[in-house]
Length: 96
Picture 1 (cartoon, rainbow, N blue to C red):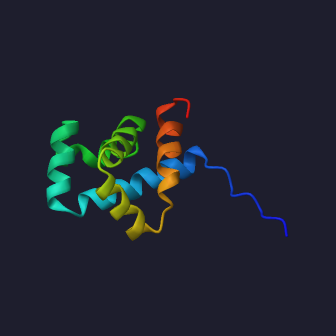
Picture 2 (cartoon, rainbow, N blue to C red):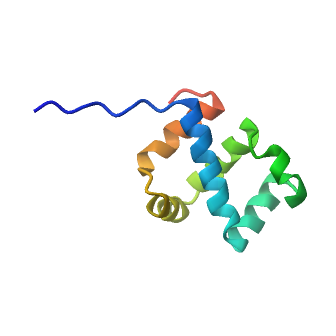
């Protein structure tokens, strides 16, 4: 039996995933406060920059730096943790 290949990850997929991660972080006051402090973004400015590549890349960097948080997000969102690194690299424009 032949296995079908998974659909390749696109930049649109990576952007959507970054927004899911951002929503996950903002739902937790501790993570939200820490993330905003580390990025230097004011809560009032968040809506205006949420779709920027810089913030999306920073969102991935933040969650990828904490394995427990990463796994918690992936479990809650039903996302394969193996997608997170490639999604980050797509948005950051770096080789994986």
